[in-house]
View 1 (cartoon, each protein chain N blue to C red):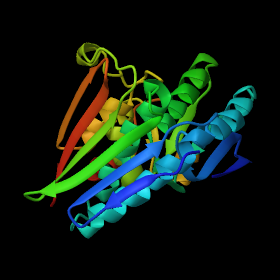
View 2: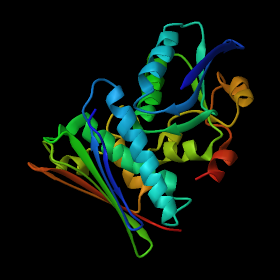
View 3: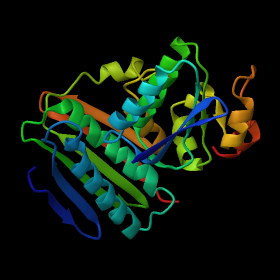
View 4: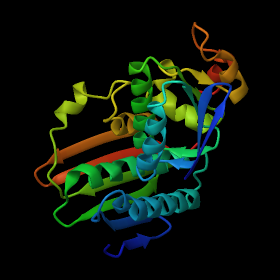
Length: 126
Length: 146
């Protein structure tokens, strides 16, 4: 797995490329939790280039969510792969995470208050 | 790592995989092999849309063995067969076992960091069952061919 990190419009955008599983989670945690110490920026996890996720990968997304919340930071997830979305829905994380179908929407809406956006897209992929 | 034994035929796939090793590297080889072998078998039996669900469920069962079971023989055993349009899978070990009663009231909440594998397997497969005792643990799963 490769992990790309960039700063966009005041956000840290982290894009894991490949598989997020029990084998690659340690690297992913290391990269993201290091950024978590950077309180200047909220975080967007761009998961559009993720090809596979297992329960360990899901656990790492939750851990990051909890740490960002504890630091009163914003966090959002970009997902356009129906397969990854299905896995999140099976464990009901779609009800917890702020999900967006593309990075542009996430950059536009993170920081705004209110519920989840892209409800039509996500309801189409069960 | 000990060599893997694989006995594949048109009707049945049997894998004995070592789960000894250190750190995250103990996961890489067996889980990659499980995924490729189970996928190959399922595809050969006419499964298509269900293959990703099946392989992930088997991986989760095997991951639990590597993480928790401590098998006496250091191995996990995977058996797949097809009957009446359903793939029947058994994943077993002869490790220390656990009290399956905890699963009835301890399925991971959405925000728990651990314990999500069982919930995932239940959701991915049509049938799921688990038995465990002093002689080890067996997970049985089924998925219907669409």
